[in-house]
Every structure is written in structure tokens, then in C-alpha cells.
Amino acid sequence: MENNDRRQFLKKSMVGISGAVLLPTHQKFETGKTEAEGLPFRTLGRTGIKTPLISIGTGNVTGTGIVRAAYDAGVKLFFSATYYGEGNNEILVGEGLKGLPRESYVIGTAAIPDGIDKRSGAITSAFTTEAYMKKVESSLTRFGLDYIDIVLLPFAGKKETVQHEGILNTFEKAKKQGKIRFVGIASHGDTQEALDAAAATGIYDVAMIGYNYKTQTLDAMNASIANAAKAGMGIVAMKTTAGAFRDKNGPALNTDAAIKWALQNENISSVVSGMTSVEQLQKNLAMIRNLKLSDQERKDLNLAGLGAEPTLYCQQCKQCLPQCPHNLDIPTIMRSYMYAYGYKNMEQAYYTLADAGLANNVCSQCEVCNVKCASGFNVKGKISDISRLRNMPLDFLRV
Image 1 (cartoon, rainbow, N blue to C red):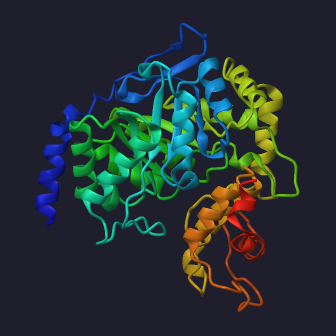
Image 2: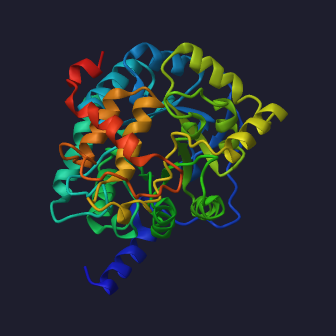
């Protein structure tokens, strides 16, 4: 598409697709407590969805029990992805919510299109709107639903990808057909660019972003978040506790403090937590009833922020990429390491590592690693450690 044609397409989209329009900058969304459970909530942007401050990311979920327990406790927003467990996670979530009033819960999923370069975030010529629509339809079948509330474009980063005509056309068509209600982006890296690009279209309703007290470009990140919120987008935070985990041999820091810190930003509607037990669920729901950081929690965050010891949180800043002589996808490998040792999700670590396309005997050609990580990671040590996962049977990792 020529530049002028693209501008015209986006201009029309901002007022035409599913009635999506930019909200005035003074727009304020409602906050309060849900009537039934008394849980604090915020409105998810222009979607109008009132979501408790904690939502559940189902990537770690292995049974329907925690899904139903979360729903019964007042959690209403459930996020899955087409690539969690090769689609089986969507089936599990659908089973967990089966038989409940459809309007009483919100389902979100991340649908990755064929033809996206996960490293660069660029859309390649392999992308087709027909294939992407089939991805959405396959999710509907796995969930066992007539519609999905929120479909996210994952690995969103580059402006060209977020504003890709084929992506926007697919979302427009799926909305018009009643297959999805709202659309959004999910971003690990280049998040500020992705947020700004999404807000400019007036089409995206939601953004799920990595947001963490260890974020090194916090002022710029907050500015992009505020800009997206003013455009009517609901912001959901993920990876909020990743910085609260020390390396695999160290103790976890204060995860409550890390979540509370994220929610101090009133533009964050909800935090996605990978809860896997009723104990975790109850702990988180008790925590969000009082967001005031205690003196001890502030101390914990300050100590963690000032500490020289790196945590498991990778900034996904990509400064490492040009430094590696063998062109390794270090940010993806670091995410795999975090999933394995932080979230204890070996299956997700396995699939994430597979995306990195590591060769055999990785790093063996370099006696000394000259990559200088912005977060202070021992890059070669982490790669050598997590690369062993490639040789483990997937069935063993699922146990």
C-alpha cells in the first residue's frame, strides 16, 4: 500500500470500523467495587467492561478447577492464547466456564498470525487475511463459544505491524460478523511504539503490555500508556511480578508489592496474574482490596530496584541483538528462561525457546561472551542453561 493510501485507510478506520472513535483527552473511566463480591474494579477503556484489578492469565493453568474457583471468587476476565499448549489451553478454559451465563465473564485470547516474524515483529508476505480469520474461528471452536470478547495481536511492536492493513481488515470483518467484540495488541518489546501506533488508529480497544517496577524507561512508558488511555484503550499489565523473582537460586522478592506498584498507575485497568492455586487466588484478591503500599513493601521495592543482583525480568530492549556475532535471538531466549525459572511453566518455556531457533552447541564458538546486557544478565550462562530444554521430551515437561 502506498503511503497516501495507507493514510487514507487509517483515517477512514478511525471513524468507521465498528463505530470506534477516539475519546476526548479528559475522558475518565469508572472505578469502584463490584456489587456481588466487593472487589475493586476499573473500567477497561471504551469497552465498558468493569474488571476487578486482578485478572487471570491461564497459561499456567492445568485443570478446570482453578478457572471455576477464580470465577466464583469474582475474577471475570480470563486470558488465553492460541499457542498455549498448542490450543489445548483454550479448550480447558472453555470447559472451566461451561454452563455459566455468557455475559457474566470475559474471554480474551492472543491469536498469532501466520507470517509474523517474532524476532522483528514484522509481517511477512506469508500473511493472509483468510488464514488469520481461520485462527480466530479455531479459537471459537476450542472455547466452545459463539463469540470471543477480546482478541489480541501478539508480538505487536512495530508501527507497520500494528497498523498493517491485513490485520485491521481481519479484525474489522470478525467484528462485523459478531465473532469478536473487541480487538487489541499484546506487546513484550517495542511497547511504546506499539501503544502509540495502536492509539493512532482508533481501532484497537485493549493493550496487554509488560509493565514492571524494574522498567528502565518508565517515564516514556507511562507517557505512551497515558496516550493510549486517552484514546480510549483499556490497558492490562502483564509480567508485573517478573522482576520480583531473583535468578533461579535466589529467593523471590515481594510479589504483592510488585503488583501494587503497577496498580498505582490508574491507567492500568487490571493486572494479569498466572494464578494456579486457590491459595494464590485468595492471596491476590485480599491484596487488591488495599492498594496502599506499606512501608515494608516500599522498602522491598527500593532495595530490589537498587540491588546489583539482576532478577529474571528481561527488559526486551533488544540492545543485545547487534552485539551477538551469531545473531542469536537473545530476548526470546531470556523470556524462555524466565518462564522456566520464574513462572515454573516448562511447557511455555519450551515453545518460546523453539521460536528462537537455536543451533546445536549454541555459544560454544565463543570463549568469552561480549554481550553487555542492560539488566546485567550473564547472557552466555543463561543461554547454556536454558538451551538444555530442547532435548527434553515435551510430555515429560507437561507432568
